[in-house]
Structures are given as C-alpha cells and as structure tokens.
Amino acid sequence: MAALRTPDFDAYPTQHIVARAEPDTHGVRVVWDDGAESRYHALWLRENSPDPDTTHPTTRETTLRIVDVPENLCVVDAAVAEGGDLIVHWSDGSAPGHFDRGWLRCHTHGLPDSNRYELPEVSPWDASIRANLPRFDGSSFPQDRTAFSGWLEAVHGYGFGILHSLPAAADTIDAVAEAIGPVRESNFGRLFEVRSKAEADSNAYTSLALPAHTDLATREYQPGLQMLFCIANGADGGESLLTDGFAVAGHLQANDPEVYEVLTRTNVEFKNIAQDTDYRWETPMIVAGDDGNPVEIRWTDWLRAPLRAAPETVDTFYSALRTADALMNDPAFQIELKLEPGELLCFDNRRVLHGRRAFEMRTGERWLRGCYIEREELHSRLRMLDRERRGAEMDA
Image (cartoon, rainbow, N blue to C red; front, side):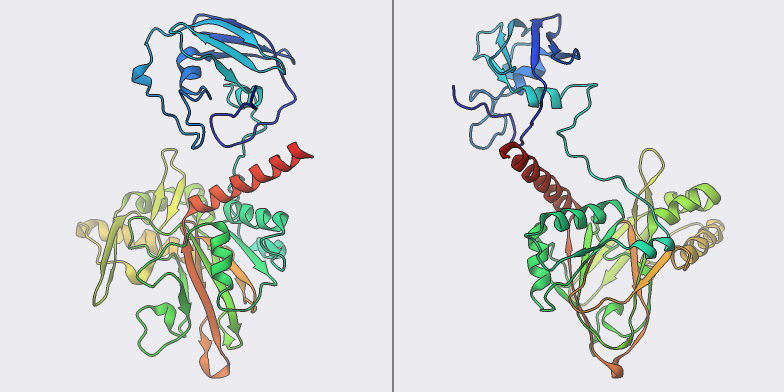
C-alpha cells in the first residue's frame, strides 16, 4: 500500500497507536494503546478522509461537498490497520477511510495535541525588558533556523525582535522580508527610506522627534508588522523608541478602567490626505476583543481627524487621551535603543508603538530602510519552520 497521506500537508509523528476501534452511535470509538479513548463523528471523519475521492491527492484540499454525503451516514465497520492506523467503512459504500494515527491523535477533542504548533504566548513588557532584549544573530540568516525561529517567536510573543550582524547593504531588508513572506506595498512604496528630505510627505522624513505611534492607522487593515533596517546611523540623536501598547492598555484596564472604556468605545477617524490619495478609517484607538482585552492599538496623533462627538463628551475623550498618551510615552513603559548598521528591528505594528528622538543632520547620516508585512506571514513561517523541524526529527 502507498504511504498514507494526511488530509493536509503537515506531518503528525506519534508514539501512540490505535489499539481497538468499533462503531458507536455517532461514528467510531477508539481506544489508544495508552488507554485514552476518543470518539469521532461519522460525518467529520468522512469529510476529512484522505482518500482521493475526498481529498485532492496533490493540493490536499477537500473536493467532497458535505451536501453530497447522506445525512444519515454511519460507520458500519471500524478496524485497526497494520501499524496502528484506523480503517473505517461507510454505510453508503464509498471508499474506506484510512486515517493516520498521528493525525487522529492530533485532532482528538480533549487530548493534548503535541504535534500542533502553538504560537508563543503574548507577553506584555515594560522598560525592564531592556536588560534582556530579544536579539538574535543574523550573520547566518536564514540558514540558521534556530535564530530564525527564535527571532520570529519573539516578534510574536514580545511584539518585537532584533536581528544583528546582517550585511549593512540596501537590499538586505528585502531578502530578510521575503524569507518570511510577501511584502505589503503602500502609498510609500514597497520599501521606504526613513531619512530626511526636502519635500517630506510624512513627519518620518524629517529630523524631528516622533512620539510613540503606530503606522498607517488610516488603513482598514493596519500593516501587521513593520521592519526597520539600519544602513547608517552616525548622526547625533535619532534613538529608536518602543512601547508595548498592550502593556499600557492592560495597565489602564487594571488601574483606570474608565479611561480604558472611553478609548475602546469612542470612534476616532484617522486620515491621510495627499495630492493623489485620500485614506481614512474610523475605529477606537484601542480595539478590544470579545473578552474585553486589547487586540489592536491605533495611535497616531498627527493623523487624527477632528473628533466627531457631542460637545459634552469631548472633555471626557481628551482627558482619557491625555492619560493614555502620557503612558505610551512614559519611560517606565518605553525602551530606547540606537540601531547600529546591520541591525534590523521588526515589530508588531498593531501592538507596539514606535518613535524616535530628534537628530542633528549636520553631525552624520541617519538612514533606515523599512517595509511592511502582514501578521499571517509571520504565523505561516513559524508553522513552516516547525513542520521543517518535525520532518527532520521523523527522518532522524
């Protein structure tokens, strides 16, 4: 028999095998070699069967439509295949389903899923993180998979990570970004140069200090990640500033819930108007999820349009804004670092606010090159690196 392929491209190594299997009321009851029991619904198994009539053998996408499966489908026989996999026979006479034991174990409700990659926990931080910054050696990037995955996990968990010892060349950021996934183009281009210029169309392209902010708050979907790569940084000043917006939001939740409520319930319009573009989006500055916790921060003072609110509520909003903005720029919540040539900073643009100190152009050149990538590219690459690792373990 040809090697069994799971219904997706992933690998599911397991030391456990199916010891016994029998039809039950809803589908199949399985007893594993460690005594654990699992129950699988007949329709669920049928829809996820790896047989070629259900799952395309090349794309691994489902070709079966559930509406074409009898509603009263049941399992007429269940057996254990050689090697401990599960064989299922259906009441409608369709091809038997041969289910890989590792895939079954991984997708069992109520059992630990040791094969499924879980993104790192989100870890809010304050200024104390400066003692142990998430820095990784980029001298062998991306061949050094340990540094690669460690860096990406830090970007997810802490909202930022630094690669150092990269070649201080203009095209380095392009190579690093594409090792993760496609770059998101914006009205500032595919890549953008953070350096002062005479006719600046953004405060970023001056030598002014920039308070803590997120980029492109004017867009329906703020870019998930931003990269800033240092090519030159010899000017006096120009230190980069980072604030964990989730940490500040959590502080407000715990210590000033009225401010948190105002900022999660008041819609603010952000706008960016230029000669040939007009971007606008309206949303609370702190976006909360169903559980009330923050899931997104939009914080760009110079892009806030005039507030549309009843006069009696304006004082409340501005008071909340003052309180929160002071925390976003408070040294207790902020870290300061001066990027060196060859260092690349990647951060979550929907969570971590960034800014900079003013710099003196006459004292040297300051040139950072930047780009945007979506969060899902980060998540996809982390899963791919984990799949690569597990595949190597299976081959060992």
